[in-house]
Image (cartoon, rainbow, N blue to C red; front, top):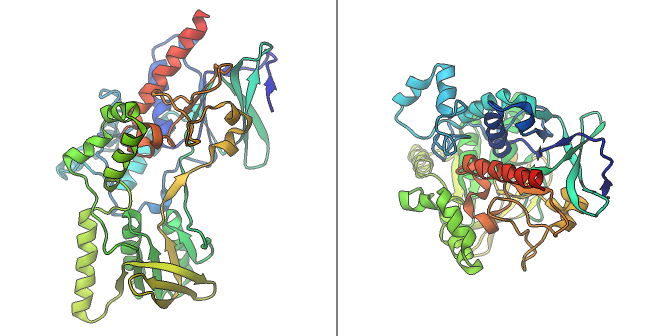
Length: 439
């Protein structure tokens, strides 16, 4: 539906949909911009988040898991190194700055970085409405047919709906868990994104865990294998993947340049065939790869168990799961691909560490999606400032934080450039407001 302009609704400069790290970084950019300005020059921003409080991959906050990006790639430093929203300022406030520096590492614990995100989110909480799930985005047409705003409708936990009008929206829905065809989640079949709460619930229940199976070959799969092996000391843990072995992540200095802000410029302006080549060449920096330290640790554990004569850690390589029969326990059929030989594993747990995929923006944007332009591959056309290209009558802005790997490269779904992307969107919002004011 196309909402009409009535002239009575308050209009936000920006409504953010989702409040993970990307829109959090943008909210801080807005906050710092507004800090020293008169009220009539400030950006009016509101962010809507369906969770009741800030949370980022809570289900995988394993106690000893570390970040895979430098702490300097936090929410602000690459945009504003003097910002007091930085990870270092967080450490200073928590009284851990010197202790952290003494570790001589660039990679903090994942749990600590989540604590940093929570700390930053609390400081901009006045911009956020938690427990607000966006259910509709409707274009607002003026009498001349121009779409200058969108109505963003959200629903709270009680089912009550609220509509906010915005000149621009920033969509940061994150990714959704990918479940392979033929498999479905259940009481004993989990996606790794829910690993910790489901494992803790199972441990509290006192139900025996004799065997756990993990499907996947990436960092999350290896971490899940290690976590289950430690959490259930009497269980056999089987890692199933189609590769011969885990592939080490390429975090070498030259390869890491693919995550530099300048690399986004290079990628964006490249021909489509070059973009695809760059993605193919550098997938080993991010997809289906594992930190070398974890690979070596898992191998050493498996070898120690072989020496001791009690092998709880098994690696079923060059294999796929062909069937899962429900029951207690589950019957998990695993095929060894070179020979076709099949083995049925009686498993108490099956963890699908099978990655994530972009959420369906069309379902969220509804009629607004029909105003967006698409390329020959039916992907959204997105400008360098992360604004979706739209039909000429639309002057309201749709910005994407994520889901732009086809236009902006590998950093689209990663933390590496969230601060820089926030600056680019913030600058675009300001430029758009100047144009509107001039008109």
